[in-house]
Image 1 (cartoon, rainbow, N blue to C red):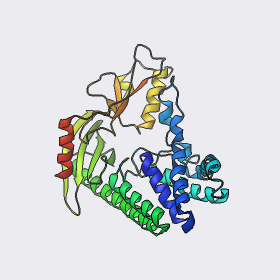
Image 2: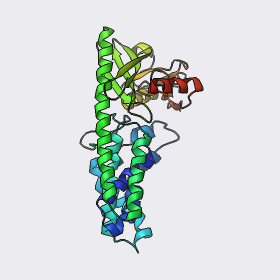
Image 3: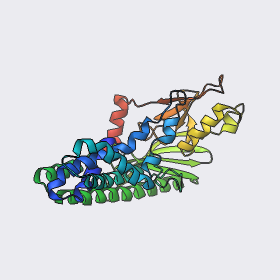
Image 4: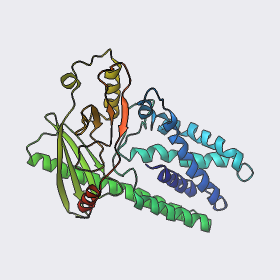
Length: 331
């Protein structure tokens, strides 16, 4: 989730557990605590561009790390709050706030190592976008009311809304997935694997990517409320196969290992960039729900197979694409 909404949910949960006279300080601590979890983004290397991908949303977001993460957040806040709040109370509110970090990120499609060190799989429920203004604004309203009135009741209402909104996301996800399955069956495709994820800022328009016979089929799925549904047929692209596509790259080369690392991060959803021949992209993500132009990928230098790959991103969207997006969203 975006870092602001992470803090907002942490503040809301901390308010719920606060004494009325401590609501404001609890909100502050609860807001700051989950931000510490995202400090893992600082684990990076100029020589190894993939290091931050492997460590972001890793151990600092795990359930097992919550007590330690809350302690770290408390120690950082203690010098500023020690005259107004005891360390035990700071830790309590930090614990409540920090506990939301991994859970909320697991609700998105990026993937979170929630069960580390017992299980190193990335958990991604894909029920809410990385940024959702409705979700964020509702939390802001509940926090502001609680801070102004010194009452945690509004935070309780905010928690009920958050739970309801995430539940709605799960329902919408299942509906979008069912529609995508039906579309694949009508095409005569057997789905080998599939991901369905919400597009930015809403629970109506979803991106579906499924693999059938070595081909990725990318579609937009609009699931209205309550019963309407529509498929917007997108693009197709051949799935990447290192043995077929890069037979000259062997297991002794750094290039091979970097491709394997990126493949693990992208859950195997790899394909060549449609416009850049030496770029392998993560098919799961694109600025447009029907596009195969990846949001990010790795650029391969086949002439230097023992050097690290370059990580690239593509976050621009044209006016034509923006209009097409809203046409699908509002249709």
